[in-house]
Length: 217
Image (cartoon, rainbow, N blue to C red; front, top):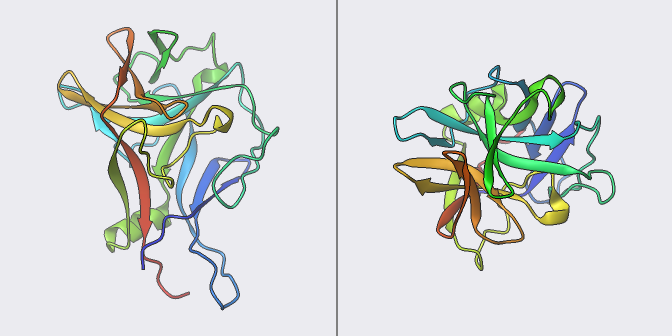
C-alpha cells in the first residue's frame, strides 16, 4: 500500500524530512528517513533530487532560505506542519543550481532575487535531497516523488511544504521559457517562479507528493 503521510524532524546537522505510514494495530515502528532539507552554502549543495531544468538542460533543485538568519530548531507535527509560533520569519522557496550566481534564487516582490551573503549568513539555504536510505528505496522501486498536476483551486493535500506554514507555502514547479522551474505556491495561488531577473506566477503547475511502499521491519 502506498502512503504519503509525512513527518519532518530536525537534527543539529540538517533539517530532516521523514515520512511515516498511517497507524496500524501493531505498535508503531520508527520509519527511516527518506528525504531531508539539507544545509547548503552557495553553490556547495546536495544534487541527488533534481526537480527541474533550465532551457539548456542545466539541472535545477528545490531549495529554501530564511531571512535574515536560519533558526536552530523547527518542531514539526505528525502531519508535516511546523508547530505554530516556533517557525516564523521570511522563508522563501525557490530553485538552486551550481550555475546560478549565488547557488539559489527565488521570486520576491516582482523580481528574481539571488542568494547573497548580505541577505543570508554564509549564503545558507536548504536543498531537498534523498537520504542514503531514500536512494536505496528509490533504487528498489519502493519510493518515488510523484509530480501531480495542480491548479490554484485544486492542490494535493499531501504536497511537500516549505517551512513558511503561516502563509501556506508549498513546493511547486512550472514550465516556462523552455525549462521547468521550481518555486512556491503561496496562499494556494499560482506557482511563483523566478526567471531572467523577474517573478512570474504560473497557474498551471505541479506539486510533489511522496509515494512509499514500506517493507516489513
